[in-house]
Amino acid sequence: MQMCLSHPTAGYYMKTKKPVIGSGGDFITSPEISQVFGELLGIWLLSQWMYAGTSREIRLLELGPGRGTLMHDVLRVFSQFPAARLATKEVHLVETSLTMRSAQETKLSFLAETHGWKLHWHDALDQVPHDNEKFTLALAHEFFDALPFHLLQKTHHGWQEVLLASGPDPAAPTILKPGDSPSLDIPLKAAPSTVAARFRQVLSPAPTPSSTLLGLSSKRFQTLPVGSRIEVSPASFKIARQLGDLLYDKHSKEDQSAGCALIVDYGGEKAYGNSFRAFKDHKIVDPFHRPGECDLTVNVDFAYLKDATTDLVTHHGPLSQAMFLHRMGLQARLDALKASTTSDERKQDLEQAAKRLTDPTGMGTQYQIMGMTGKRKGVLTDEERWPFMESA
Image 1 (spheres, rainbow, N blue to C red):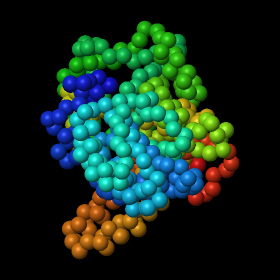
Image 2: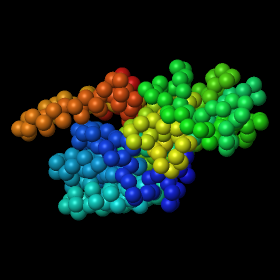
Image 3: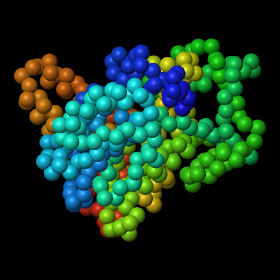
Image 4: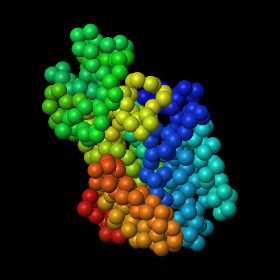
């Protein structure tokens, strides 16, 4: 999965010939649909800095910023508030693709130069320096779903890894593709197109050190029955912990937080067993049909991210994207934008975009949003926990 997406020359995100995001690409993201999405996420980040006391300078951080649209909308929000505009000093972008970096620079450079904000790019999160003198505001939108994972199956011998072998299995010619599993997976609207099988699943002969370790990495996995399959991403666990470490002020003895973060992604607060899929031309396709030419994704186990960071941060949610946006003032912002234009077509476009973001049969429930604030002493106020009140 990592090779298909991030190979220096053949990786999906590394190529320059065709855009991967937008109507001309293979998928579209919430920030590309409506500016309101990024604005409301920016308001939540800004409010957390205000609750922290506004005494520290701000540095913004995004993992996998895509074309820079989300960060641009967040920065526009910050630029409208004098205190936040002056406090913001740095923008850190974790991005491995030079193609994407170029798009991000084009999108963000004017705004950054106008306000004297420094842009920094990093190949990995562990390259972002710890700085408790600044308040870190972080975003990870559709980032964790693209990280590599291990597929494990529980047997009477323990957790064994499901591996891939080349060529079809003569005894059972099947294609590895998303299927229905009501206990572990989100049902998909459409199945991938059937093509000649290039790979088949094979179960490792016995538990391996890695499969055993991953099977023990969460207490939740131990209670699953024999026959269960789970998608486990040690890369997600590692990066989530690194992110939590940036938000935790280890020098203040938990007197204050060092920052906050929002994670937005497919998935839920549970393990999944068969959610691996690919997108090509806005359709779900076989992940192994055209390696390096499709976007690959797997549902995010938000509970696993909590396992990784429980001693570093306070978790909020996850909450459905629709609920988050509505509670953060989606309708009020939409009304203001509609009032600012005389074009009926523009008003209709704004309305349709908002409906798409909150569609209960689509993006509104498929995407979950989880907040994290650096752990500190005391009880958070209702205002600090908003809009995650029911899920705190």
